Length: 113
Length: 113
Image (tube, rainbow over all chains, first blue to last red; front, side, top):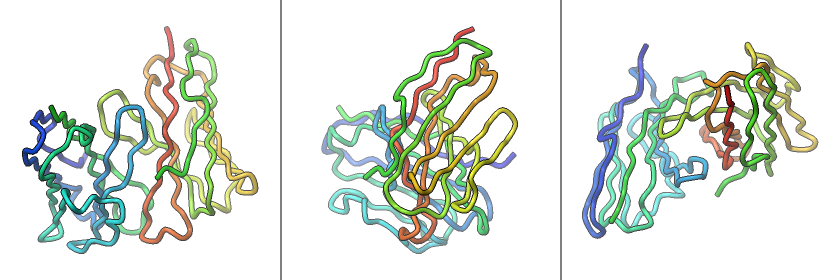
């Protein structure tokens, strides 16, 4: 069964360092989402792609976060510089055309020291 | 920002009992979805109910939707220890565009053998 892949699964970094997360959606899924989930809360959308285009990044802290999906397939989310408050689970999801269901990857747990 | 609010925040029951979780939201929606998240993992889609539907069943799951009260409930019948997880409602707002989901804070369900 096809799955959304994410790496790394865990990342520990010090504040002010740069971190990057990678996501490979299910093949053929044009829509890709990045979410941040703080412990004890629900996921919050950071950025949404349709193919290679950003269609919603209204909640993305653009002074330190960036996201790209250059060829409309896999995607990278970057934080530079990382802050203590960025400690969270970063989830990637993809959605096939014609469906409302989102398929989530296992997430990357980020700890900023 | 999170639109949905789940109630209760935490629920502890015995195997074989039914579990009911409630979700309230603020704005008009296209559909409402329920997802499950096992500890430290990604989310798994459970069931979707459209705004023109009132009730939907899937196996041991029953979802209701009351758009006049902007609320939904998820019932899990004959619960099992494997149902232990966090459950999130997610709304697809009418005005949101591009099929983005807004998640609530979740209900943590513990099913004891």
